[in-house]
Length: 528
Image (cartoon, rainbow, N blue to C red; front, side, top):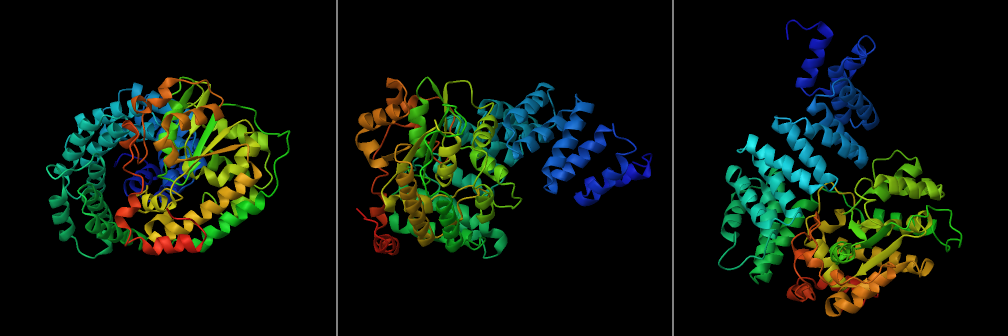
């Protein structure tokens, strides 16, 4: 480093010390004199990512990759920032370019595996993560990343082995314990209760141990439920969610304002001649999470004319962009107001373009982001030929299923799920909003009861396929044979035929759930 000119030495020092603002400042001073230096553009790009200056990051990393096309690490970082911007087509192109260069450093390959996972290309993700593990077999997080990609691809036995390898390397890799518990049904002969209990008892009350308390308690909830120890299971669920709630500042009132603002923005039926994008490709599957949305997505995507696109944030991001509002929340009062009268055709086209390259290979695709129920007013106007299927489920089972799930910590919609009554109140908001949409767009939304689908599989399936204007195909009844990957919490369940064990699950916890039942019934929701 001694031979480096002083500005470059300062740049490298700032980069190595992760002083991102300083690195960007120094790089900005160098670039006017050395505009074709790929290394400076690379550091400026990485620093911009860390500082959440994403457009600048894309500009610099594109330039770095163009100037140094043989640098796999430059292309991998470009792919990473393109995914952050929901530019999936460009991200895959950059990732494919980087992977073709046959990188041999684990960090670059791990970055590529994560990029491929985020765009739903699990075959490529697994290939990248396998190379990472071969290069760094003693790195726990690499083993975990490979394991979760294998879960999404349905390779469950190998996934279990990788996750156990992760835990043998790092017993305090808390999320891995929860993933392992959820991987299959635990039995008296084969479970992890003793190991989980010992680990939980070893934790203290420091905030730094909160992730451990969340994951271990939820893992113990799942395993005790499998073993029919319901009272013990519920205690662990409440303890785990309480540990998570302490880290969040959720407000039911704030969500109530957002839901009301959405309804106020759409209070009349759309005109017959919509000015939206005319594509017939999208089929939206919406509803409260954990109510059968993945099941319906698998049923529809088992049709040969339909592909699964997974849970896309593309429509919420398109609305955010159309609002021209620069607030950190994906949806808030400012965004709703800013997107009240967008160019509908441009909105629909922006959404469709953003789904590529995951879509376009077949006549239709399924977007099963459950919380798209918030955006149905925009969807109806921007995509007048899109089909919308909404899942409904027993209200008590719906709330319990949300409360029992640990959703992705950084996902934008799930803070309500850390408290039982907050979950109930959120359900009431959802119920009211869906009634509003149904009154405005009665012919655009097919509401399907999860219980009807379970009890009358073929009639309900035919109803869905007919609504989507697809020809009947028997493969839609054999959704469990669908080979496409699943990256949701239902990745294990939907690889089995329809089962009834999730119906009326709330009855196992009837005493503990009495406050929730009272809340729902006082609001006019029938509990059966």
